[in-house]
Amino acid sequence: MGLAIPWSFTLAIVDGYSVLVKCPIRQPGILLIIVLGDWVLSTLILAAACSTASVVDLLIHSDGFHCPPKICSRYQISAAMAFLSWFLSMASSLFNLWLLPSL
Image (cartoon, rainbow, N blue to C red; front, side, top):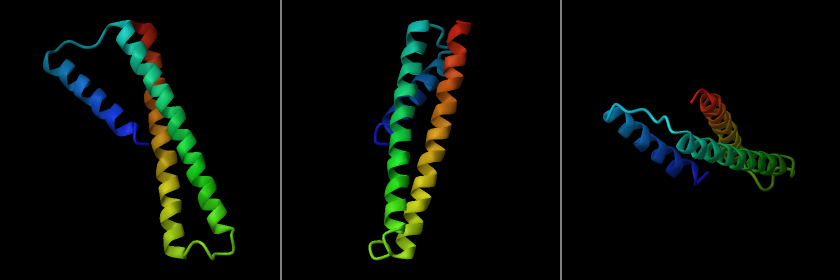
C-alpha cells in the first residue's frame, strides 16, 4: 500500500499539468505505462487486502486471546478499506485499458 500514494500523487501531477497546458495525454506509450503501473499496483493492493483479511480471520478465531474486540474491529475496517481501495484501483486500470485502443 506504500506504493499507492506515490503512484496516485504522480498521476495527479501529470493530469494536473496536462489540464494546465490544455494538452491531454494522447501518446500510446505513456498511457501503456500508466495502464501497466495500474495493473501491477492493483495486483499488489489485492495481495495486501487478502493478507490483511486472513490475519484478521486468524486473530478472531484464535479464542480471542490475541485480539481484544475493539482492536479486532479496527482490523476488520482496515481489511474492508483495503478491498475498497483494490476495487477502485482496478476500476481505474480497467478504464485506462479501455482508453488505450481509442488512441
